[in-house]
Length: 251
Length: 270
Image 1 (cartoon, rainbow over the protein chains, first blue to last red):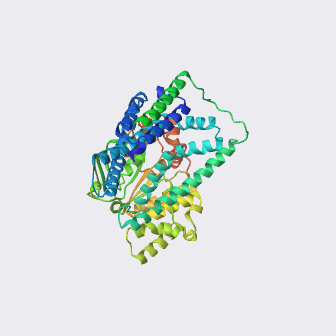
Image 2 (cartoon, one colour):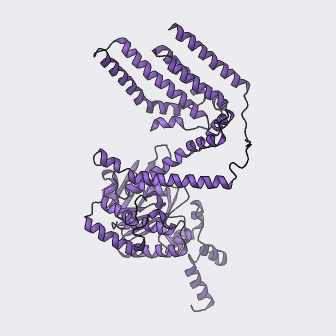
Image 3 (cartoon, each protein chain N blue to C red):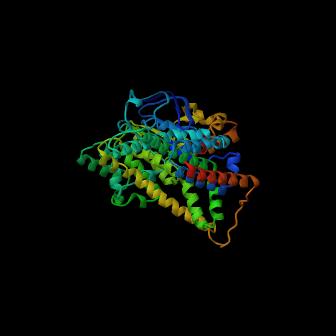
């Protein structure tokens, strides 16, 4: 679960945190596109390493490295599965090319994990909602999305409290065969789901009593406005995308 | 006896919840653990049945190190009733809810039936046996939660915030239940913010602040030291504050004592 540590919002005042969320969404999309564009070791290594200065600039290297460590096992699995399946396809022979492609696939995962981690670490749910709204997504959907993100830690905390209560009543999660073990999650999942439903109904009532949806034209306390550095960042990303497309034609 | 010896505990996220706590709870003892939010009270009681294992130090339950035992084995002796009853309900009926732990602990079927029936009777819940626990009132839910733990007769009964959201009648019933448990030779540990409730039953009081024990003594002693109480963010009971105001020192802990004191001073019989 430590991989998820790299996705919790941090509240800091760094150039990356203060970048317009729409620009950061553009970054997320373009890095994803670049990572999918290439399947060679060197360009994917460049894409991964190019993000490290941004992580340092955002002062989230500790959180990022934690999600990297958690993600390492998946990277190894991707490498292993690629290598094994490619070797099996070629009649159980391994050559340097297969190893290279498998390493590249693992690096693609690292690049994607880094960009998603950097995005969620530096973009608060509120700003994300503002960005979505400015893209003409109805406020109801933006609100649902940010609320879902916001409730994750609360539900995780509750799951722990429920597990504690049931274990104190003699529930042993790690005993028995697979089916028996799965059945043992019923006493944990039932209270969790009941409370999630109850919580959502309470939230709906609280929202209604605060006039949610009363006016068609909803205003925001904070509005997004692109600053010079946002244009610079967007231009740099566009340039990187163009270079990638050109390089892709050559390689 | 539950023995906590110089226990330190740090959560995986780096929060130091306990910093060297030592105390012991014997059978027949009634202990109230008090302190501000985040002082480490709940963390401490989770060590009693091994839900948490100390980072440093040891916890012994009847001489057995909690590190060398499972939560299920320890819970057989140490029953913990958590604050929110809804965090444990998942059965279709109150009957099944009370039977759940008994089945987990491997009681034979006829004994499960016998114990559930007896426990429901004792808590006045027979009429709800077939009803869903989610449909009960707040007080009844709490009663089911307590019943579902007491059904297996743990020797140490630990309750986290048992008085929250309970009316006066429910609190009186709780108090009577605690006295019965003590009479049966069990130990009762209560974690609470409810100063007036503690002042009324006068147990041994353990004050915790920032992961350390500030005081451990009789209610009369601890509740008379206002300086100590404020360090643990505990407001002294009203009767103690009243007598402090009138006599310059806290001479009564609860209404009963205050009435006795005043009527003896005024020479009125009661």
